[in-house]
Length: 182
Image (cartoon, rainbow, N blue to C red; front, side, top):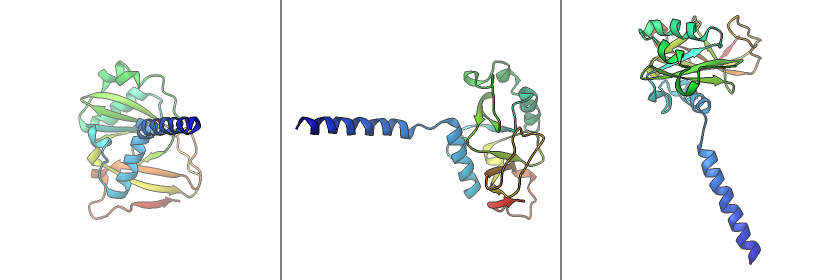
């Protein structure tokens, strides 16, 4: 009888931990889920749609300069937020071998290091756009891919998200959702 009670307490405790732990997700996990959704359906997911702008930087070198460069096409300036290290000091002491995603709401930037997924930008050293203006295509790397902007090499078989501004798409070409990079 006693062992049955202990068993129930252990099971209930484990379920409570799973409910709490399983429903919590990091910013990076939420971004990856929304990138996946955007690559499939062409529209922002529930997490990214909460922000005014999404900024993507392939690396952390000259972070403030890259943010300023990326924000010019959208007539924004995030210098004030970045000078105080962004929301919760998230934009200081960054160390990422993949890139940074900046989540902007009311001109306040939250920087998220990206380690669990990768993104490539078309023709841009950095990019800021409203979530609805992003075009994201999931691609599989077929050959070693190096870039002067990226501190690491992408290997064959890795899945990446190719990101660009929708306005840079050709008007008469519909995007292919999954492709491979040669």
